[in-house]
Amino acid sequence: MNTEEVLREGLHRHAEQLVYPAGDPWVRVDRAHRRSRAHRRTLAAGALAALVAGGVAVTLTPWSPSHGPAQPADRSADRQLGDLATTWLDDGRPRGELGDDPNLREAAAATVRREIAANGGRLAENHGVDLLYAGAPGGSPLALARAVTRTADQVYWMAGIGSTTLRVFSTSPTNLGAPAMTYTDADGDRRVLGVVPRGGRISAGRVTIDADGRAHRTWSAVRNDDGVVDVPVGNARTKGPVVVRVKYGQEVAYSDPQGLATPGADGVSPVPASAAQVQQALAGAPGSGVEPRIAAAAVNGLLRAAGATADVEQPKVLWAGRITGEDRIVAVAAGLPGQGRLLRITQYPPGTNDPWWTYTTTIPAQGPIGALGWRITVPTGNDVVGWLFDTFPGSGARLTVDGRERTTPLHDGLGTTEVGVDQKVEVADRAHGTHLALGPEARDEGSSPYAPGR
Amino acid sequence: MKNDDHAVQDFVRLSWPRLVATAYLLCGDRHEAEDLVQTTLVKVVRAWSRIERRDEPYAYARAVLVNTAAGRWRRRRRHAELTAGERPPDPVSDPAAGVVLHDAVWRALATLPPRTRAVLVLRYFEDYSEAQIAATLGCSTGAVKSQASRGIARLRTQLDAEDLTMARLPGRTS
Image (cartoon, rainbow over all chains, first blue to last red; front, side):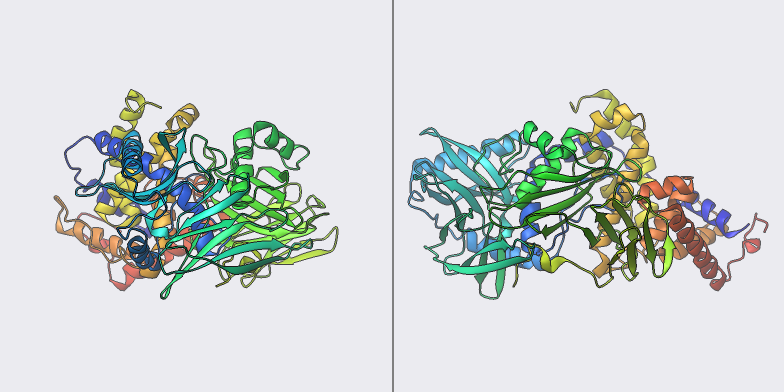
């Protein structure tokens, strides 16, 4: 018996000896599914904040480009910060000028309870709904409350609808530390309101991108008004987007504002693009094309990445199509007023608009991008390298991995491949004499506008 | 999608044992295997309206399972070998010879990197072709071949090191 046969038999015998417990697996899965619906909104909000907090231009999602939605990162350091962040947020004294209003407190608690119930959840034993902030910075009520359910510890942003009703617009994990919300003030200007630790040192970070595509981040101190900060968002004059940074003792937390601008069904997307905008963005894009929902996911992903900037210029899809198998890649760029452009490249597995990986960088405000390469680590422990030539050399690109030529399809100038983290990759566009060296030392995190610049 | 959809309920019930077996071989821990399958099937339930039309829900579920397991491996890299050294479950009934084989293969498999282990499980338990494995893992067939080859070679070395020749097992011939 050879090794393969031994292995085959060993695996089957091993599996056959599993004893399955009594009980209907459907009941277990259905119960978990109901719990996950409540969880998913948290993850949607958390993923964006984690992108900012982690300072990386990569959304880590499961292994294969074939299938699977995103997974949250699991970092022990975050858990330590999370414990402290929960304490500093929920310190027993609601912030804001309406924090002592019993009617608003009751309305907020009822709204959160309804939200939890609507998502199939229940408050954890011995837990209620804690009001963290209540005020009316833009003239109508805005409230933040914390609730611990059986599956999650979350904060809920609520805004007033009319004079008596609150509605949940956004949820995020409590342990991210400094929930922030964009609102429109009485003069029509958009601002960011952040709920932060009392006594913490708060800064607002703004990203500016030169016309040549180089990103710069500047941090400026913001007044901490007993646990609340209030700063204008970026626009053509003040630049943007804004990230709130909290320093409290030895801990540092970053928060990306959630948008209140468009109270849509999911309450998370700050500026969902219309179908017409998506179509306009897609016009003339190279590549084999993608279905509208994937294009919309990519465009909205870019708009979310642009954060609280109100004046993001019309997004433009630079490439959209299928690569190996059923996977789709979409590269979208959008200008930030008076600045360069933000470019976001995302690979979507089939059957989902949850990305496998996302790469974000900056490019010049005008003109061609020339040759762009990227390299990111994915959950397999391997790296994905990719390249995009906007001169479309057809099959003229040559890829070498550790000096050995590798054949990888090139689609209208775009290609990707998975390599080991220690392997050296070079891509040469023989037609145009362009050459990209992609690591393993080649990382582009420093150019990301979301590198927090600690 | 309504959760009372009989098709998805039937699929969950029918696929559960097989997926748990695959998950167990991938991760080496019974409880984690069930957790992985639960997570996998929640994703399947969520996407049911899409994948049902593709008429291959089991293949989809299996791919999601492998991906989900891979995501966990990645996050655990700093705490490696969490499951690699675990013993297999106590056999329900097995003659001594089978236990020897069983344990030796299991121990050898547990020494392999997760991805190599996944390649071998898909190849020799799920009977995937190299192309199917490549599609599932998102790599080239060449990479699958080399991982499988390295994995088998390492298994052979491990089994040799334990001086486990199949000829010594009662009821077997080499």
